[in-house]
Image (cartoon, rainbow, N blue to C red; front, side, top):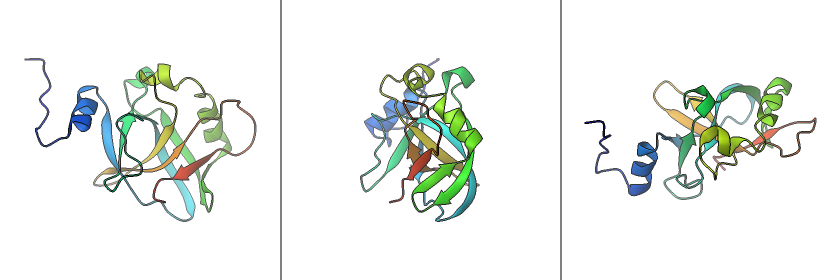
Length: 145
């Protein structure tokens, strides 16, 4: 009775992620330019596959926010990636060195930007909060190559 049932079709990594309360999303195509907003989640490094043929991203939620997204960031797509606006960059800087405690995952060091689509969520970019918070741009690298 209080046990979660995991379908047999899921692989062991995906099953473990679901049991741990993590959420998996596909990697999506990011825009080449323009303004956008994305939800910010922790990256579950152990369960994600960012380079394989079946790329998937497993998300770690913010324990201080009922295991939901940390917050939403705004920014602009440029050739070098997604450049966060100043307010969003400041929010990301506050997470430097705190992701393991905030997600409950001792290996969590990076953040994932997730686009909540009409049908499915998709991860579009990844970034590491600057360890030494300094002024200047914070840029997330696109996941679609």
